[in-house]
Amino acid sequence: MLFSSVIFLFLFLPLVFGLYFLLPSRAKNFFLLLASLFFYTWGEKEIVIVLIVTTLADYYYSHLIEKGYRKLGLFLSVFTNLSFLGFFKYFNFAFENFQAILNFFGINHPSFANIPTIILPIGISFYTFQTMSYTIDVYKGRVKASRNIIDYAAFVTMFPQLVAGPIVRYADIASQLKKKNISLENFTLGLQRFIIGLAKKMLIANSFAELADTVFMVSPADLSPGILWIGIIAYVLQLYFDFSGYSDMAIGLGRMLGFRFLENFNYPYISRSIREMWRRWHISLSTWFRDYLYIPLGGNRRSTPRVYFNLVVVFAVTGLWHGASWNFVIWGLFNGALIIIERLGFSKILKSSWLPLQHFYTMLAWVLSFVLFRSPDLAHAGKYYYYMFSFSPGDQAMVSFISYFHFDTETMMLFILAIILCMPVYPLLENRLTRIKERNIFSFVSINILKIIFYSALFIASVSYLSADAYNPFIYFRF
Image (cartoon, rainbow, N blue to C red; front, side):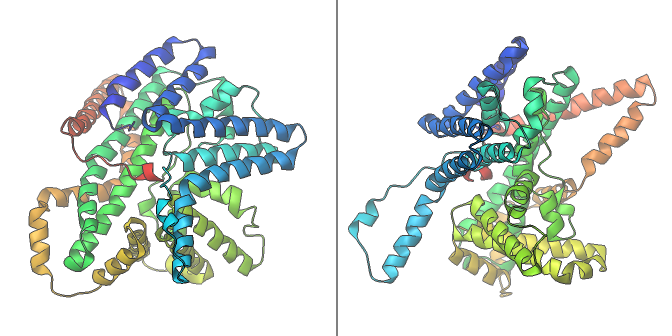
């Protein structure tokens, strides 16, 4: 069930909120658990069993750790979680590579063709990391094992962040599970955040999605360099507004329910280095790898070669986390290599250079890396890179493509608007409006009326795309 769907917006959400706020405090977590399991089962059917088993297993393992069987409990938790994740997400990938090796040596058996395709449960990469962080934190003594299985299960399965994050840690919301901050102010702020996220997804991300998907469906050899650049830039914008929009919706829903989730994006496209980009991009994932992989490997405390080795491991795993494909692994290593180069001294050169040049380098490197991320395989990525920089005549191809896909003034304005919104315009505007509201009662009322009109217009415009059955993919469902 997509957040950007009619069923979710006009059936599931009103029913859940209506009952949730009517129930007494002691019953809210239990109802939230039931609603979340229904939400997940709607799309995943019997695969919800994986989520339930993972939740129950880590609840038991956390108590095993506190009873003194620390290493056993932690081992069982990591083994169970990685086994589920490995089987569902990487079994087919591993078998395909094993089969390729056998084929290289001339070994080919008919039974290989009968291996079934394993269906990837939605959100498994996210909730696996949530439950693992919980047992690791119990092992490290950062949190106490939950004594209430309903509260713990509500934490794991909470529908706002279940299928695509942000990755919420038990330590961050343990107290909120006991005492939620439910108020009209929080509900209003959460609703505004949700509408912003929905608009980013429906009005901006989806518009770029159709353009990017169309470009990547065509052989790079049949398109001009200009179109290939437009295609990958459209994808990079789509990815940001799609995923950050989903995070906004999740954070907004959480706040309406009385929870405060940590931010997941901090305007990454204003970064002036790849290191800064990763501090601003998908923050819940990058900090997870920092705390539960990079630091345990030794972090920055080891020798310089070991630090670089740690970075290579972290970014290889980061790539693999995003998908079972060599494209993702190489994409991760590409980013890791850039960070190592910056640490070797390039960051000093960057800092002393012209600010626009710093930003240009960062975005160019980021855009180029996502050719690997978006391409269906390495062969397609290689061709895409080649023809991006193959400055052969292609004016006629570009003209026909632009005409066919209505790459007109409206589309150009969309690119300009998206680039502007990649900058922290909204917080600056909010701060300005807050100062105006504080002047007098007239300003306060006027600004509030304008905000109601603004958010209502955004919501209506977003819903109009749904009613028109417009293009509505969601990238991170497949991760």
